[in-house]
Length: 547
Image (cartoon, rainbow, N blue to C red; front, side, top):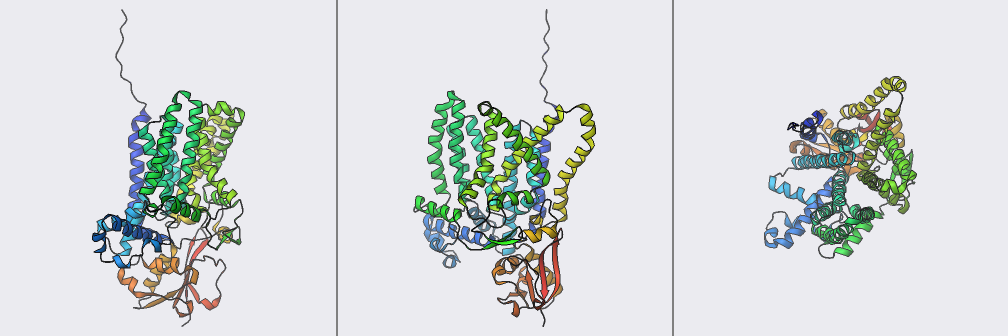
């Protein structure tokens, strides 16, 4: 007689700790946002973004409750939709922020923008969690997934801009969500998952029209999946037929500008975004060049100089391993779920970059318009971690003993250096350059193009000068980002003391962030009495003009 004992399955110890570790990570990240969200200034576009939300709120109110809308105190002063100069940007994120202001009863501009910064950061945290889920699924390891999320957060520029870059970092979060819902749909095509992916697609498009590449990715990879899973072809075909009209419907519903004429208005918005004709210049590799004629290497160079070296090195290893498998046996590679996922990640990374290069689309302010491909870069870096682990296991015992210490030191340095810079450079992590000293970076690339340091400069002037009336000037082209936006975060009493004058010659103080003027200023601008440097890179100067 054989006795069979009833033994219960026990999860590995690491899996039992998973909910606690993951919860602690994202809980701590949210707490960091609460503690730091008041440290960042108002960037160039923030007033415009908020106005876009307000105009759309008025438009929606006029269509849904016109009599109630007209009773609003400031109704007549809000421009109509026809006067909106930011029509090419959707308001899926901006419109709820405006409604939140009203519900929360926040009226002072200082508190309004602080609240917006906190909500924006929470959105980034949600996006990082989705990225964790996506990476965990691809690599079948919650530890690698959490490592990927930590790398996203510990990317200094992305951490800083997660507080105030409504367009690009919010778009990154929604685009990542759309890729995750696409993977769900590819795994099992159901009408519920098609509906979910259509909603995620619309949310991304209604933040930035660049999200229109999502339907192309979806159809392409639905076809690829159906090619290798013939028993599911009917399900994939039905999912595609359901996904396309639902996406179109949700896009229109979430973007009020499209309500009256969806096709022509969307075409105009997308054309304006992709063929932006504003004539301006940017500092790139030490030369002032037109944003209408950027060299092909503009995006790759910006990506490499602003991404921690370890992340880029691992991404290079991951790309090499992926190409090795793909070129060695393409059909065999694509026949695996992992191979098709990696192909999707490569398309996510290279598709938009190659499109920008081939179409010669306009970019400015670094590579922020393509920030949404960065999660794909990190997924390839995690692929590099896997490849490095496999190579380490194949190495001989003597080789491992020889390389253990130097390899460990390089890894620790590569992981800790971005964190060190984030702490040391706070709140100007947006000025991070990975391997370039600040003294070199400021000669080659744009500095504080957001104008965030203007707030700290303004606050310093007010602390040093007790006069009831203070005049401050700057370069005419940067007047908005340096001075007008900086005043928004001052307490009302301090705000009333500052007068922004149109001409520097009329001002007691002259303040600059060196945007479009990388060279030093001559003595005629006065004596430099205050400056902000980040890693040796001067990003702001305050001059006291002669009396």
